[in-house]
Image 1 (cartoon, rainbow, N blue to C red):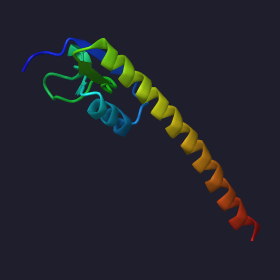
Image 2: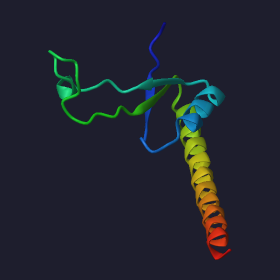
Image 3: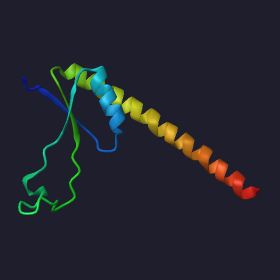
Image 4: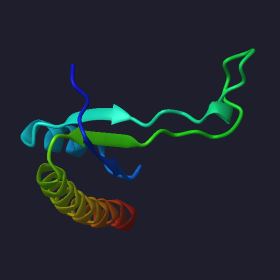
Length: 100
């Protein structure tokens, strides 16, 4: 399989469902970044320091990656707005229960 030329690192706070949705839509490959050499103890295989890999999208054209990045950020903003709305609704539900 040939290596994809271009890569785009995705911030850790983005929901993975949004990333996979964008990868499918723009025909990209989803990978994780490789851990640094000193992230794991060689004898035990246990992590030495906190290591959370970033998701990386790989593709053949920078235009597809930029379009995917815009799509991901737009969807993430919508998701965050939805979380805030859900939080307000839930807060009101709890307040109504307390008043009764």
